[in-house]
Length: 159
Image (cartoon, rainbow, N blue to C red; front, side):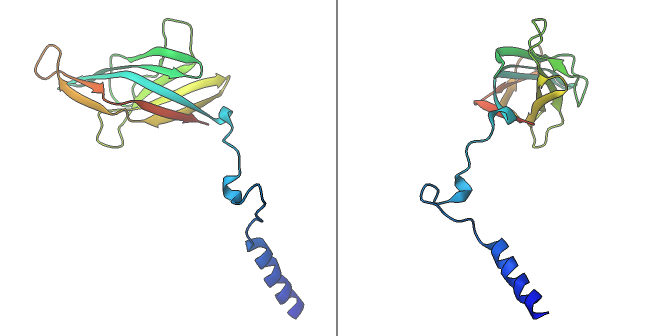
C-alpha cells in the first residue's frame, strides 16, 4: 500500500514537471514553428460600402484580396434581412471560390460579414468580422445613408 502511495506521488510529480530547457530553446512554449499556412488565410477587405435607409440595409459591396484573388468585387444586392443570400465574389467572372454573406452584427455595427473560401471540394476556410465604417447622408433622400470603410481591415480565415 505504501509503495503505491509513494509511486503515485512520484508519477504525479513527473507529469507536472516542466519541459526541459535546451540551449537552442530556453522557452519550450515559444519554440514551436509558425502555424501551418494551409490552416489559415489573411483576406484584405477594401472599398467596403453599405447603403441603408429607413427600410434598412439596401446593399453591401467591397473588394476582397486573398491567396487566390486580388481586388475581387463582392456585392450583396437586394438585401432582405439577416442572414443575406450567399453570393460568390467575382461574378460574372469565373468562380473565385470566395463567398460572402451578411450576418447579424455582434457589436453595434450595421452588419457583419462572413467570408468563406472553398479550397477543395467540400473543404475551405471561413471567418466572421465587422468592417469599421463611418456613415453619412448621401444618395437620393435625406434618409439615405452611405457607410464607408474607415481603416484597413484584414480578416483571418481558418478551418
